Length: 204
Image (cartoon, rainbow, N blue to C red; front, side, top):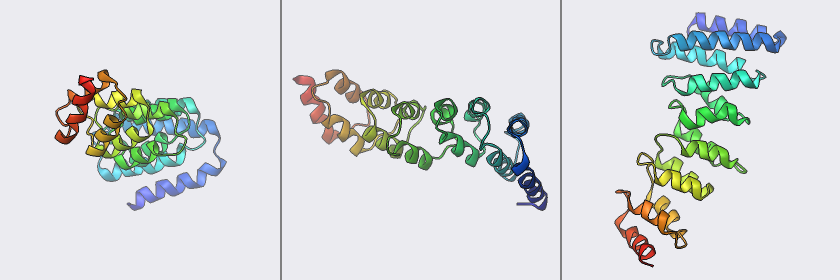
């Protein structure tokens, strides 16, 4: 980090303990607007500085402003990673929802950790399951913790990668559900050794 960046953060750190919520919110909005105006042009170092500043301003900021920020950052490929991660873990679904559902900047490791938390609200799992693309690491957790609706969302998404264990988990819990079995069979990535179980269900 450059001396200029360190100076900016040091000045911010000195100001924050006495800052009012309204000042914090106004500052976050200005920083977010500045970032969004040139997100595609900033270097990695510049994005990292925005990340550090946002990370200091997000705590204790008004929920409605954070929800607005979340919606804005969710669609930015180079969104500040730490800020996105903080928003993704916010307890209010209006704040974390857009990030969980859309943000490309949110690493799979964060998605897995959030989805695998004890007593995780199923509505948050629905948000994650609705992402345009999902890795096997994420779908494995969703299939383990989610309900039938989440299973179906994943199965119907051709860009949701599923492991052999994920397929096995769903197939072994079909309980005669021919509609779900047909949806699984329509995928071209079902392991051949598991198709026999789908055939048995469909022929019953």
